[in-house]
Length: 127
Image (cartoon, rainbow, N blue to C red; front, side, top):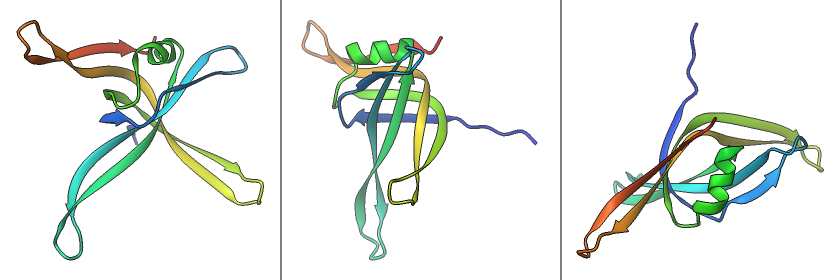
């Protein structure tokens, strides 16, 4: 049986990237992004729903993130889901699901000389 673990997201950064290093010296950037949509509640009323995603970039992508990606900016991300499991101090098991990024595109409005705006696209892939 074959399987597929692929995620595509367009969202806004919820915080500045946090940069750290692994024991082997590879840089890692972590941040959150949000997506927004509308859904009907039990009273059949439209409500906004915001989803938060934990994002992880490593190597060259984390270096790019530390320089060019900032809170509030819109990004397009391709990656895969990974769930980590650990035991907390209180003995309870905790989980976190992260998006491990393979490719990121920074989407931003670029102002032209005539005052109009166009969408600028900057694309970066993991090595």
